[in-house]
Image (tube, rainbow, N blue to C red; front, top):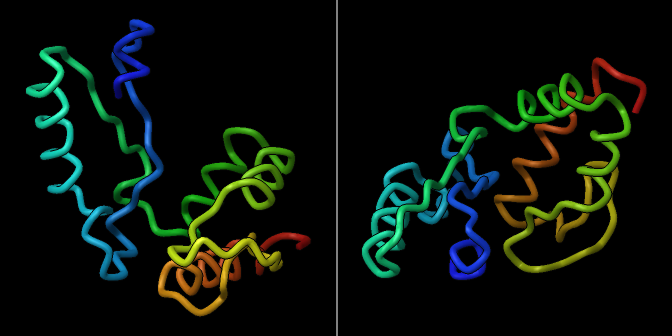
Length: 120
């Protein structure tokens, strides 16, 4: 937020999602609304935190990526994004992670739902 404000950026976009809530309070819509209010109060500026994936499950998120950018975007997200709360970067068909935490489980199940309809 500080970097955005310094650069005159007023809109921040995050990939948080409450639909697949896996016990992580930082992904809840209420938490992010509170965070936006806190940032705006603490920085005396107006930043908007957008969360376009908030109400999509992981399978729908993969489908949205395909609609927006085709297979290249899906592959970029699969290879370069990270959901694991343990910080593990072990590669899997669904992306990198520990394959044991709730976030990895959700990502793997979402990928499986998406990949079942595609050539992955």
